[in-house]
Image 1: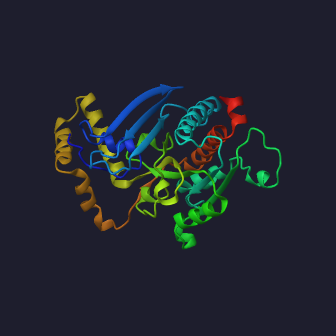
Image 2: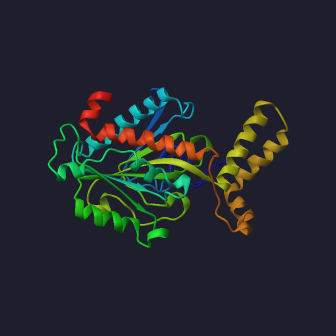
Image 3: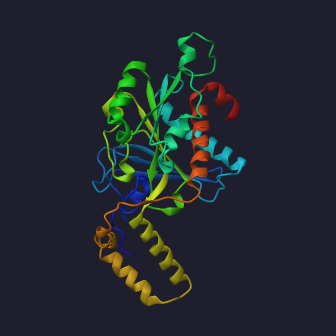
Length: 316
């Protein structure tokens, strides 16, 4: 099947995998740690123009087969996540320096509330530093959730920049919800990158970029896919149907029809067929409330361990 079409996704290795050939300026390595698949993709400045990503390093942690609600599983994810974040902090030479955590998203919309919920669980210490309280082993960390432009009327990047100029952190860690083109990745993946982020890009509301280029300090983006758009979900179902029919030798005519649709740019056909609906629909699982709360705790714990030396010595 010809799937040379870029479906809506914020996950970088989903985008690179949609091109069925070796990509110029893109290097991928895959490792397994604690039953978690770690994909590292490095994109050079001169890379294949079909990949609409900034140059930098992207890590994807996949834990599809792990039980998110199991305590031991959570510890595994936290450990791998924190080690990956430490690797990025070291590469930017900001480990144990003053940091600021930014929780993007709308707290009132569950799939979009990963960022604010994460900030509710992190350890902040800047107020202790301001009051000269002994903080041995704990870095100077502050946190802020700027809300969304639909509620504030202000660009998120402008809010973040104003606070950054006042607090003067050495780096930012920005946490946000993402979209995916693979249903199995919803609530089962964490992506980290040193390239920053454009708030709202996953649901088509791209705002001003938050990155080193716009703020002048390293910006590490941490994202979790919580939604998939309707047309991409339809393609996931067709993919699974095709696999099932082939494995069970059922109705090759249907398989041929689906493959022919792919060859004729099925994504464009779906866009045209659903244009009369006039609703840009995103889909999320029914257990999203529980999943967001659990994932927020996992990300918060991983950040705490990565940024505070005392916690690293205990948990890593």
